[in-house]
Image (cartoon, rainbow, N blue to C red; front, top):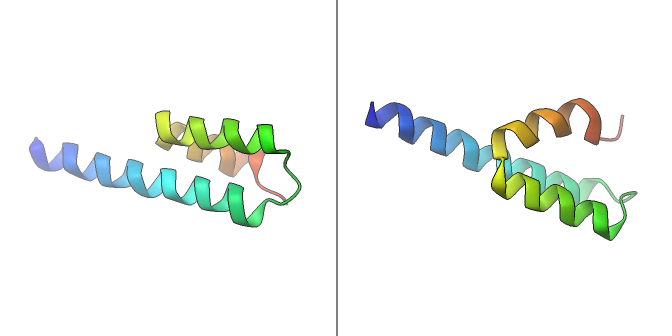
Length: 60
């Protein structure tokens, strides 16, 4: 069970880093407030935020 928790933690960390990187580097069209909201959500709800960002947040 500890391995599963560690694996989920690593996946959550990777998701948070991916969202933060994409918001700050690749998504220049967002306002500063929107970037701050995405980053806060990525830190608090990393996996869910990554899924939502992938579906609606990225530039097409």
